[in-house]
Image (cartoon, rainbow, N blue to C red):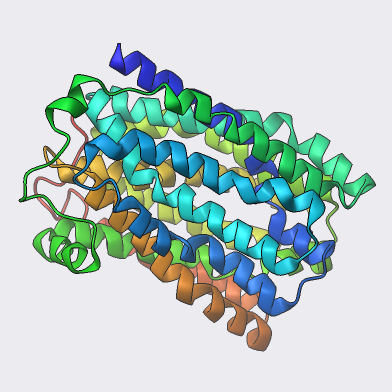
Length: 404
């Protein structure tokens, strides 16, 4: 009963939040094109998404060692992350838009440890990762149905992005009804508090966990390199789309949402099956090798626009594997221990690179040009691939594979 209810709530939450992601994915471009925000503000928009994860790390700490807070954490975060967008039609302030984008990501990242612990507690074995894969695929399948409508509305009525943001945020907020019905029953009542030996979500003890688990530390290093490779050119992308490729909103939505969504949805279950049979380091190496192709294919779009759609199709395939590895690494590495501390470190590492890498990318773009920053991103992803391969099953006996 608990398993079926958890899966249903997870799927409904994904389904009702999916339309919001269609507009959220293009907000940086919209603010550059429609609101004419400055380059410094554009950098902050891009940096705020991963950097906000640092605050999400501390939000995640509210549930660490307190399983009785898991459901309340999900409910409150779901309300708070959407609320600022309801005011977009009535407020014209670029700093309010930027802070709303950042606040959304604080709670979006902050609830990941809670969700992963809920899934770990109520869903066992290989069904755990398949549940996550299906839920993630729901996001992307829905995303293929609505971008053309949004793109047309944005092209015809440039200010419509404000009402689209508010409407989809309200829809996403409605999923709180299902979250309130989530109950872990005797699972939580039997162990609301974890033993004192488990880790608390604090900076000092996060560092202690990494020192005691070198395999998890190496996983974090590889993901840090790969993630940095994908972030470093993000600040330049809105300018590249608008001023180099001269994309309409419809074309942009088709690439960012439809092609990416199809790549994700068509391969998510395949990635889930692969994670059951291949150690996580080798799987991550495949993910980062695909990530290394992405910026190079974007450069090819300057000669032929079809490469843009190919690039985002491959990006979707890559992201399906990346999200599965990133989200399931906490339950995987923690074994029989409580997993939220591991997942919280994932969130913190995203925030750390988000505070630094986008600004480095902006400097490279300004002084050396778009080609250099795209190539730098590809090289960082290749370094991540080499790092993950080094710690794969071939060189680390007993490397982690998900239990079936």
